[in-house]
Image (cartoon, rainbow, N blue to C red; front, side):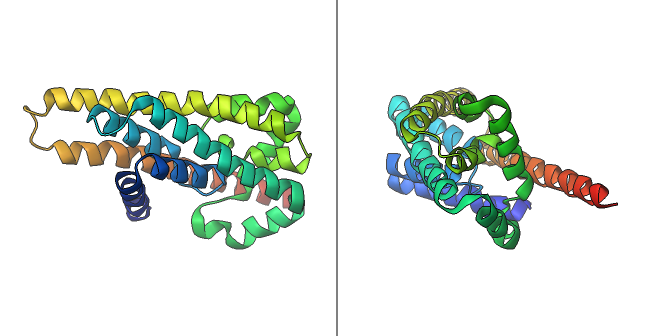
Amino acid sequence: MTSFFILIKKFIEIMILKFGYLGIMLAMAIESACIPLPSEVIMPFSGFLVALGKLNFWLVTLFGAIGCLLGSTLAWWLGKNFGEDFIRRLIRQWGKFIFIFEYELDEAICWFNKYGERIIFTSRLLPVVRTFISLPAGMVEMNYFRFALYTIIGSLIWSAALGFIGFKLGKNWQTVEKYFHQFDFLLILVFLSMGVFYFYHKIKRYRHWKQLKKNEKI
């Protein structure tokens, strides 16, 4: 899993370093389209580049949120036009190859049924469920204008918060750089830890869900 995440991390870094704000937007769009490209790495790394003076914090936040809206819109459209059965079959057949699990769809549907449309906003501030909540919104044909409004507001907050974390880390690293020659190592270690925890959490939840399904059949 660590090797897989190193590849993901490198892909994120190359995309942002090469394409700047458009790279951030594309990466966040991919994440919000239910593909596990963790925003917990995308936005802090972008914030780190803000601390280095290479990017503007508010543009980082804006393009991150726009990316979320684009990816979420695609997921909403898939839910609306293809429905739950098709999406479940798709996840069962191909999800395991890109770390997408059926329990995540179950959780998103449960959250949406329990809290209604307002969960579109609040879920944008939560790991994992934020990625999949657009699917059930599309399945019930939620009004797109309200969906987009809740999504963009919540995504602005999420992008700003994660970007600020990366910015503060970057500021601290700049301060202590003269004392630590392992600067690059520290950077890699922090972002690697974020990503490994993200995927470890996904796999752990999947195994728990799978065991519950197995017990139900007994």
